[in-house]
Amino acid sequence: MTTTVKTTPIAGQKPGTSGLRKKTPVFMARHYLENFVQSVFDVVGCAGKTFVLGGDGRYFNDRAAQVILRMAAANGAARVIVGQGAFLSTPAASHLIRLNKTDGGIIMSASHNPGGPTEDFGVKFNMPNGGPAPEAVTEAIYRRTTEITEYHMVEAQDLDLARIGRHDLAGMVVDVVDPVADYAALMETLFDFPAIRSMFAGGFRMRMDSMCAITGPYAVEILENRLGAAQGTVVNAAPLPDFGGMHPDPNPTWAKALMDEMFGQDAPDFGAASDGDGDRNMVVGRGIYVSPSDSLAVLAANAHLAPGYKAGLKGIARSMPTSAAADRVAAALGIGAYETPTGWKFFGNLLDAGRATLCGEESFGTGSDHVREKDGLWAILLWLNILAVRKQSVAQILQEHWAKFGRNYYSRHDFEAIPTDKADAMMAALREKLASLPGTALEGLVVEAADDFAYTDPVDGSVSLKQGVRVLFAGGSRAVFRLSGTGTEGATLRLYLERYVPGPDGLAEDPQAALAPIIRAAHAIAGIETHTGRTAPDVVT
Ligand code: G16
Figure: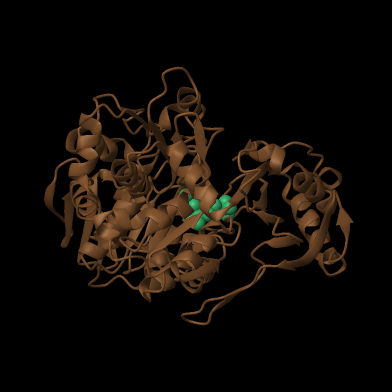
């Protein structure tokens, strides 16, 4: 039986950089999840359609899945494909949407944000191409949340999502599938598994930190079972509702245990970590950290060593705050380089149109046209494939890369939980003075240009304004200021810093030292301390 429940709009259901993310108690409050999900179905249509459903296993994942299934049935969906236990990594969900040619999917995740009863939860809709809904769709969903009056729900008991196989929910087919199998099969088509297997057999040692989040089962199956990495290579491998209290954000601050191991005595050859929903990755060599911007550039320069990319790349796309290291590789390969706003959704059109093969972001995201999300394990496997073929260390590969292309020193400084009004005032004041900045000299740097990044999608012509303030210095250095669109508490100021050194000298400096004048200039230009009271960042990547 279907019930129609009267409701009223709830303020603030506006999706951010990647879906709607809120504190878990907000999502669990009366009508909150239901209003948003009904708005999604109202906008994308539900009757007769097939969707994929899964999440990263965080607190409330299981119950939210049951609610979404009951609502899909009430709205007339024909079929929903669900990962066993309502688990799916974000890239695996993207793959299942594409593989089964479904009408899209709902992913339950707040990504790298902590999980638990008082932490974060999130929901996002992905399109039939497997990628996050573009702005036009998320805007329409948001508008719908402001006018919603009712939602629909079948009355039924919870489905047993632990049982793989076909279920019936009030006439809707629910197929519960192994969350790992299809994804692992896809990886086998892209990478040289025999070469990686022989590298492990030859004593190559790896540490993979799954941070008690979704990639644990995927990493154990692929790295340990199929590629023969030693048992115990994957740590924190069991996904937990509160991620074991960890902050599942793979960066040097939150994956500190991995950093310590990789910089310690008798470190493994290769280290990696991934985030809550498995789309981010961090890569570390023995005694050397790989910045995500450098990782994208190295992967692009070496992708042809993996079977899935041996025909070469069509183009490389990066988000604006990501360093220009990948552009130099694109230029050398004679292929297109694209600069998009922050948010994986902006890569979708370029991938669909066949203009880009590899995409990457400074925020620990890398991926390709194999799915329409960034993909943590994919990036880790491509690194392993490259290491297996080149038979060099991560450090040697980076040094050779810098010697050939020059080095884009890069760092991001995050200032978290700033009162929103103060952060907004700082950005407004900065925008006010942009026109007056060119020609200004400070800290030995001269401002060459300053603007607010605007993007016109080359495929569909859509325009996105105010995507981050750029201050460009003579010589190729820059500072970029943006407010995060994924936080749930106050505002997070992201300060992105970059300096290019062509070499051959000066390629082995400490990034923070190499960037020191730019850091000081950025603080002075934006008045970070005056506006926010902050002098030092909370997170440095
Ligand atoms: C999301 C987006 C990414 C973006 C990142 C950071 O990642 O998919 O494209 O770079 O957020 O965004 P912001 O700087 O606005 O916080 P994820 O892993 O959180 O889904």
